[in-house]
Image (cartoon, rainbow, N blue to C red; front, side, top):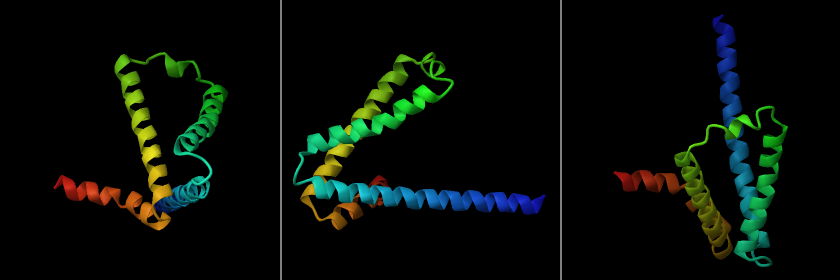
Length: 125
């Protein structure tokens, strides 16, 4: 019994590390694409197209699940307001990230993006 538990724990750890690696890889590819398109398109256009392309899998997920109507039954006003606040924060994060990528070296902007958590911890002390 103990041996199978160790195997499942190591599988979860490998899956977690692999997911983190893929996430960082995709964020870097995302930044490279933004840097490449920054001279051609404005920041507003890139944010618009990024959000339009991101909503397609979300809508597909909602429509193809069996619980698509149950999701919207128990919504409260507080939850909807929090979702809008979260959406606006994410929108501003995208705008500022695109501006930073376009106006700075890619390596500097990426380093600042990934080191932001350390700055938050240091400033909260």
